[in-house]
Image 1 (cartoon, helix red, strand yellow):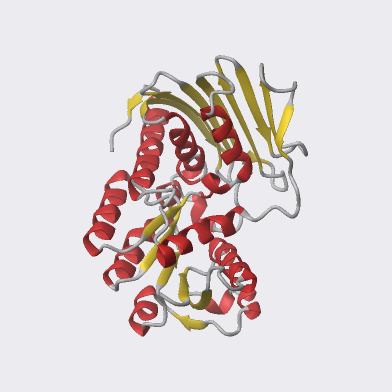
Image 2: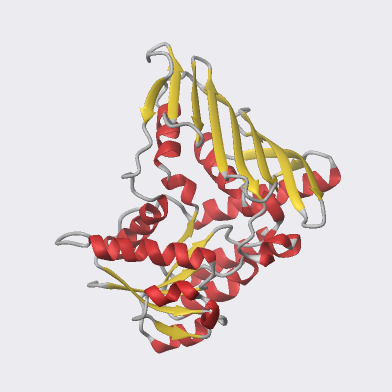
Length: 338
């Protein structure tokens, strides 16, 4: 395959994020680098997307069906709201297009499984954009934990959140977005499963309050290997509060800590490291994780390199989130089933 032609479906917040990442890859292409071209976009509200003025060359369509029928693209990048993922993936896959789909894969395990069956039926390249697997700090923390340097990893704590997202009104509708548990904590569910393996059962509590529907949740995961993790998510802070993330991984012989608030980033305490040894310093020159995940998928499509995230991984992340939502409603532990 020569140049990889890309079309985005959905021109909202994530559509813009992905568009800028594709364009950075395009501008960085030299010689053996990935040869990609963002050439089309589809959205029912294109007229209201002011950021598109920076992409005047894009062919514009009102629907995914129009974009796929036009035959202008090899890849469809799905950036529509979660409830629309299945329909757009089916349109793209049935048209023989490679598909990159924003997380979470679907609003329910049932729909996630239907998407998995669809991409298997049509045999197209497919990946869900679980971007935390491409944050260098999180990658470094996992590699360090699995290297044995902190002994056997047994416990993790993760936090993700801030003010309720204001860029997309549909996120405030729990029936569409799944709230903070599905839309936001699915990042950490996927990452921690990548670290510890399968989740056995889930306990959770959550609180939704205020006229604007602020959302806060605390979830406890018990893994098949008997490790445990506490995951906290916040859409509950006042507007204007910064978004931040934290991660701790404790092993039998050491500790890894990361906080987005700290300049020194990932730190390791263990017998073989200096106290508080910094493993990944933050730099404004670091590559953007969204660009890294898109490069990873483009390389798979163009060169056949292995994918870091399978569709089964994406289904499993939705299953953990679904179990956590049920646990928060019933105040009882829930066994995770896919």
